Image 1 (cartoon, one colour):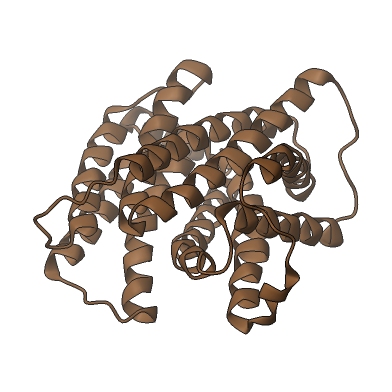
Image 2 (tube, helix red, strand yellow):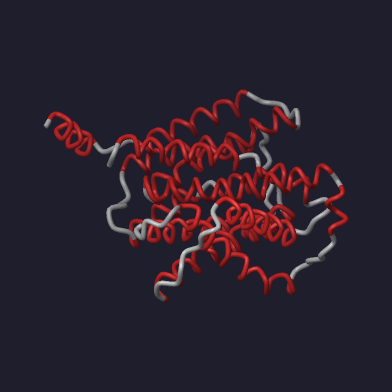
Length: 306
């Protein structure tokens, strides 16, 4: 793999995670005036419009197999993932959701092992996962001995993690077509919005624009729609195409670290030494997960010498 291209893939993943790590706070703020379904629909509608404005071209219909991949990515990565996550936030703590969603890398690795070529489970990934998991547990509990379980919300969060793993598989398969990343993301968003339409009638959705009179609601929705959706899905999809589903998903370990840092800076919550230790172990786990096998390093070195 071209070193410059691989580096750009890592940078894209880091940018994505830095923004996604703060979305729990914005979603929590918006849940005071919006239902989970309303947040989901408005943010991705904004994101889709933004992508169309940036690049008006759209991918033409090629064949039904390709369209099924786009539809699967839209259903899993947009509709189901965020609907489950937003509903989970209404039943359980944001820290619980952040912790449970952080098992996405392991789920993705297992799915990729069976469904994708060249993405087999490696020992370094498993060691990194264990290190990151211990760190994430420390961050989540942050010195609290009592485990706060909320079964319905936690189960929904686990469901969100599972469907996002599936989304990564769809995106890796779609990356083989080498479409422009913005056009590819447009198509995924389009299917995601189409799958949301039936849900609008099933869940609590009201077309009431008066709630956007609040500057806080406008700014948080724009952040979720343009930043966390349009921009981040494009950068994430690019990262998956370059690095693969497994290596990209490992960056999700950083989400709780960023979330707790944002909570300290924005919400002025206390930072304990346990949380700091957890953050260090999580980052160590990410580093180990991203390590290349020695054989691969030697092979790359031989190529460079040649």
